[in-house]
Image (cartoon, rainbow, N blue to C red; front, top):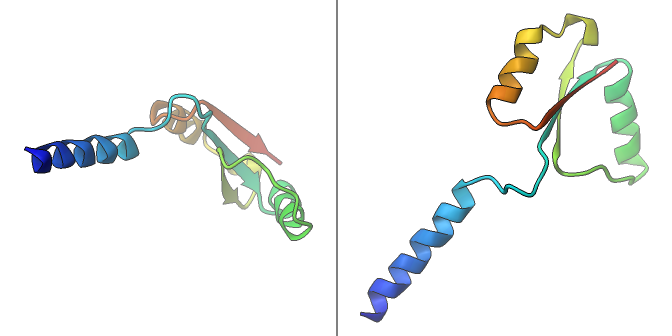
Length: 85
């Protein structure tokens, strides 16, 4: 009986890992290679932290970002999309 409870507990923990945390804001950042991305790199080298909820994606130019990418990120669960250039 104790083994079954341990298995149930493990299953619940695995399920929690698979589900995204509702309290965390997920932001997708589409950063220009020449501007915003360079600034983010500089922040990292000077040991300044930015929230782990920001997922940076480097693009060659923010002007090349297709609106479909923004909508796709929002549909897939992002709370916000940041296009920085």
